[in-house]
Length: 261
Image (cartoon, rainbow, N blue to C red; front, side):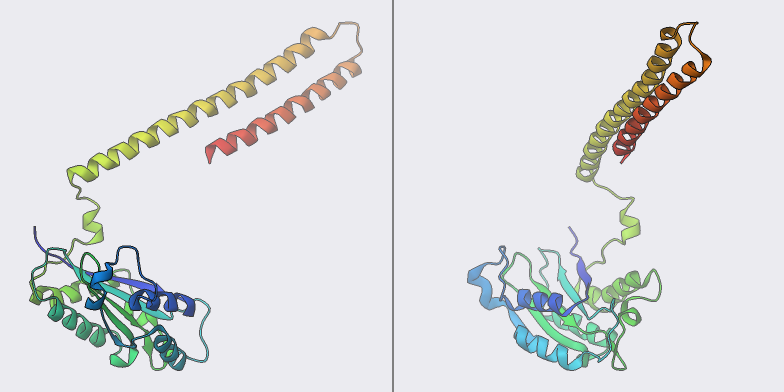
């Protein structure tokens, strides 16, 4: 099996989210899958504590910040679990790539290398600052294929020279499935089909009940009123019956809409 370079990017939109991310990195919050005996394998650079991260963040954050602004970016960089290359060099090259493409060392908040989980990986927190302002769009936006471009650049400048393959693009992966994936999707489709057929049957039942209500009420009017009654009485009872039918229809239609959702 080939080994792949992996990089993921997440937006952090508040100081609280940044604080939580740093606590994970520093192991102030230890995840369940972390191995206690391997905690010493972790390495933290730039800001070694969450307090230091938040102090640096508060120092750098612009005075005016848009409500929907991205306050920080988190990068998670790793490779296939069986990768036999030099993890240290791979991570060093990754940090150099981030500095080159995301505003330099001055934007870095924290670099955390975790060796206490199944696969070594790197967390990098940085602020998307440009000319003193938060500008994540400059770094990760601009056009719909920007993320693909970043993936390509990361592989060309980091993954390839560390003996790693590029992962399959999202668009391409949509059309490629292994047997296990197809089997799982088939089971999901079958379950959805059963649910759909059940809803169709319930909707048909509601429609039949509506028709039956109409037929019953109007038959009762036609056969229950004698010829001697005045036309105005007939109209009155037709009106009353119509109200009753319309009320039932409204109730059934509400059921119908509920089942469609």
